[in-house]
Image (cartoon, rainbow, N blue to C red; front, side):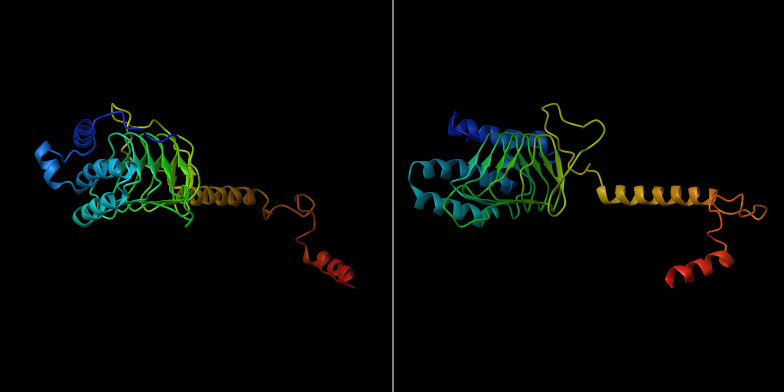
Amino acid sequence: MKQVKHKQTLWQQWSEDVQCVFARDPAARNTLEILLTYPGVHALLVHRVTHRLWISGAYTLARMLAFISRTVSNVDIHPGATIGRRLFIDHGAGVVIGETTIIGEDVTLYHGVTLGGTTWNKERRHPALGNKVLIGAGAKILGAITLGDSVRVGANSVVVKDVPPCCTVIGIPGRIIQSKGVKIQLNDGIDLDHHLVPDPIGKAITCLIERIELLESEQKTFALKPQESCAECESDNVCNTEHSAPELKQAAG
C-alpha cells in the first residue's frame, strides 16, 4: 500500500476533517460544537501539524506536541503515522495509532482501537488500512498487516493477519466472515453498520441441532416395529441377544 502524500494545504485538511463528522455522527449539530467537544477531532487536527514537523525532521517538537495532544484528548497518535483524508475517530477515548501506521481515506475508528506493532525492530511494524475501513470499539489491529478497502472489524476483535477488501472480521483471533444479503451503506459508500455482523457460533449450533433432529428422524425408520420379525428387519439378527451373544464369545475366544 502506498503512503498517503500531502496534496492539500493544512487548512484544506482541517476543513475536511471537521466536515466529515456530520456524515458519520448524527449527534453532530454544528461546526463549533465539533471543534469544542470532539477529542478525536482535536487529536487529528494536531496530528496534521505534528506529521508535517516529523517529515521535516523536527522530531522532538513533533513528539512534544503529540504528547500534549494525547494528554488533552486521550488519543495517542504518533507523529510518524501516515493518515489519509477524512479520518473520523468517534469518542476518541483510548485510541492508539503507532508510528508506521498507514491509514487510507474515509476511515472510521471507534474508541479503544489500537493500531499497534508486534516487533521492536526499526521497520514497518504497524498495520496499513485501506479506504473506507471501519474498526469497531476496542478492536486491536496488530503487526505489519494490510486491511483492504471497505473492511469492517467487529468490536473487541484482534486482527493479526491480512484481510482482503470488502470483508468483515470478528473474534479473537480475527476470522473473516462472509456476510450475506444486501449491504446497507450511506450515499458516500461508507458502511457504518458494524453491528450487523453474522454469528458463526450461533449458526454452527443451529446446524448441529438441525443435524441431530435429522439423524433422530432417520433412526426411527430403522426401529423394529412390534409386528415385524427379525427376518423383515434391515438389521437382520444383530439385535437378537440369543444369537449374538455366542457369536461374540466365539470371536473373543
